[in-house]
Image (cartoon, rainbow, N blue to C red):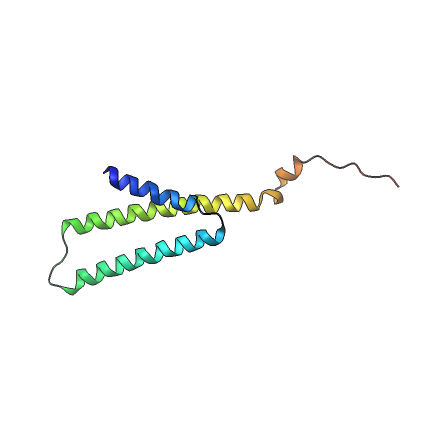
Amino acid sequence: MREILGIGLVLFCIPLLVPSWKWLAICTAIFLFANIALYVHRLYVAHSGPSYGSPGEGLGILFLMFFALCFFTGAAIKALYFFLKNTKKRTMLYRLNQPRQAKRKQ
């Protein structure tokens, strides 16, 4: 169980370490396509033979969902960070806290 939580923690931290929007989008796309490939492979294996799956198959899907949740939670937090970082200068609260410049009399 510790191994599963450790993998989840690593997958949570990967998006938090990327330096820009571009790298966040690339990492998310790679992880998304890997998850899609694994799920399509699982569907192919489940429907190709006379077997209807095993109890371990459900556990594997649960682990895959947990890993995806960890990664995409980290990606959402990093996306929120980038959004707030880029809109900091546009907020009203930021403008109100800035010292005002004195108007010149002509």
